Length: 203
Image 1: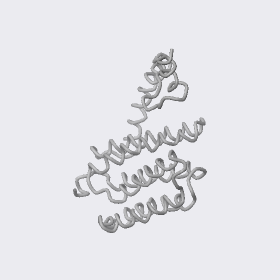
Image 2 (image 1 turned 180 degrees about the vertical axis):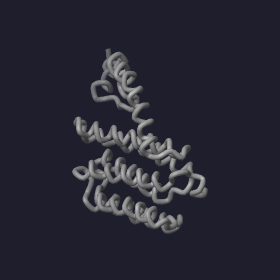
Image 3 (image 1 turned 90 degrees about the vertical axis):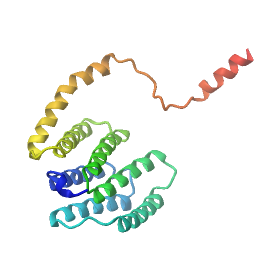
Image 4 (image 1 turned 90 degrees about the horizontal axis):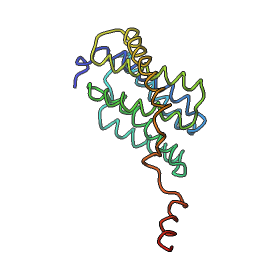
């Protein structure tokens, strides 16, 4: 539970804050301005604490602040668009977790959730520019994961992450081309699917 257990914890904090500031810019058209501003302030606060080497907020203060942030989120977003709401909750929880992270396990959880946060961008944009930027963030996130267990520089860790992703790219293309397209397991039956059993029973 001590920062000394984590090598390069300052670089890790900077890198993760940079990723989430970049993510926030992708959601400016889909999330309310007050919520975007709040996420940006929280990321900036984490950078400030890292630069000044100040202690992170205690659990009581962070939980109280999280409750206020949750109220701001619900009041500005509402419950109509559940996809936007769930994305906002994911971003908010990750940024707050980053603000409180003190152990290697905390950072491992944040990095894992960051992969989901990065993938959430494709719910709203699938352009080539988006793919290039998010792929860069993927490489950076993998690099941060490597820094948890090593004392390498971020540059070296990023190069290793880029090599791994390049090696995985042909496999991804093969799976995309030859793997049969199966329906999503969370897909609910539509009206036609729901009426089919009734029609069979009536026949």
